[in-house]
Image (tube, rainbow, N blue to C red):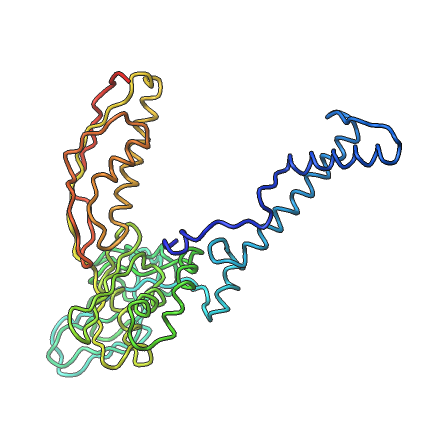
Length: 382
């Protein structure tokens, strides 16, 4: 969830009321009413039938309180999920994106130069030797006279992110035979496939939807269009190095760099004539990787000797968390202090960091891990 949403104040439609509050109030009301009617005081004990009945009723009433609280919160972007979030999106004309298909570039090759054009019909299918999934050409392509191959963009017939990562050369079976085509293979790994859009990604697009109201080219409009083009985008930076020049840098989850095929899909969407200002020249690319290393030694309090194995596992998990955080945003400075914060929170007594050192980044850079050395220095007195 983006910071603007996460920082919104917490709200409650039931205040701080608890199950015990409701139960105590019901018991008090019962005792007061009993004395009013009968003229004698009564004190209910926990095991009495009436007390148990009131407790059972209190549970049901408290459940209704919770449902009321949830129902109220579903009207707000910070809390809404599932179908409730879909209905909030409808107020701004935003729909949840369904699954999308992976893409790649496939090369269709001849055995020799021909004296005629070789046509590759749209929809021509290729697959792997195991025929797990079929990719098909998006548009008609042709090998010109005098050439021996043509590259064509292909899309998976089956949507979802599971078809990402088919390595170059693995899509090498031509399903629909074409005369004179001697071989096919993907020159780039498959990428860009996505599962159904998550609640977090949808909430972010709804929040940014106001940027779509302007065609004057403000930063928020380009951020919105980028996320609209491809919901797998985790972070976007928009810069304008010169007049009418717009550079958009994007990364995926944990700082993933997108393939050129995915970058082209995003750029084509943004630069459509009905979206971008006529005067803007827009390019979409990955930021530059800024390598950094991790090397540190940590120590554990001697009083926690019985928990050494658990703390060591927690420290390793904290390092992974730091790596994900460090690469999770474009232009995020390399912060050794954040690494110390994560490791200390995992249970370390102290941390001696050799690498990384602090490095300021630009809006076109994202830190990427190089080497990692996590050293346990032993127990120390508290």
